[in-house]
Image 1 (cartoon, one colour):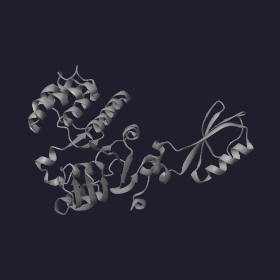
Image 2 (spheres, rainbow, N blue to C red):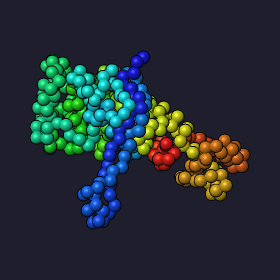
Image 3 (cartoon, rainbow, N blue to C red):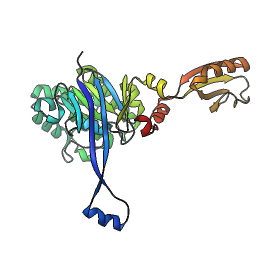
Image 4 (tube, helix red, strand yellow):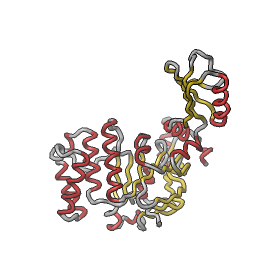
Length: 328
């Protein structure tokens, strides 16, 4: 099956002015400015198939938003190539723009002073959506997100979560095939995050859309994405599923067990993470898991025992802690 998104050694570099602190350095900079080359995205390559929902992860400044902007045509790459639905994004052709959308959790696209319904009508005019099709799509989205009582209020009078729902509805009214979602649940409460995730999953299922999602909330990624791509210091660090990521980057596993005598000294077996009555959770190096498990069962009165991979949040934290030199 041909890919709908393809990146081949895609790169984006910036010339950033820099100078030392102080008045003398400021005066010198007026006549001879110094620059450094910043590699926001450094020759990354991957492909995404139709209908995939892919998590695009990385710490702040890793190059995620820059990549999404290049894929949506807002930025021209310094080198390499990108193809979305067989279009070159930087050309921003009409047929290309009709089939994609970019939603950024920290940006407003709808008119601040108009009710959402009026902004939706503006989107219909921009994309020349037939009236019947527009009404069916709009009403279906309003029903799924349960915002029927909000669409007649000016956007400025809505809460952050309510506003984000309207932004998503407005961005998808033309039923795009490709969704670039940059932190769509940023700053929302747990309930609102779940509602947005449910809507994205329903849209993907109903229209077969391809989704590239960035988020710092691992609940978003775990709920929506079978595959994740990790970018760090502008370079591609990992491409696979979450379990493979844990296997590759986690140095520890957790062992949970129940003891008849919880007062036993356990320091010889590993690091005790938590104790709840007779239930104990211990963290041990991954390569020693089998040996420690055997010792616990042989030396202590263990009633039950489970071995689990490290929590995905801990794995991601360890991935983000990788130094630039190691990534390169």
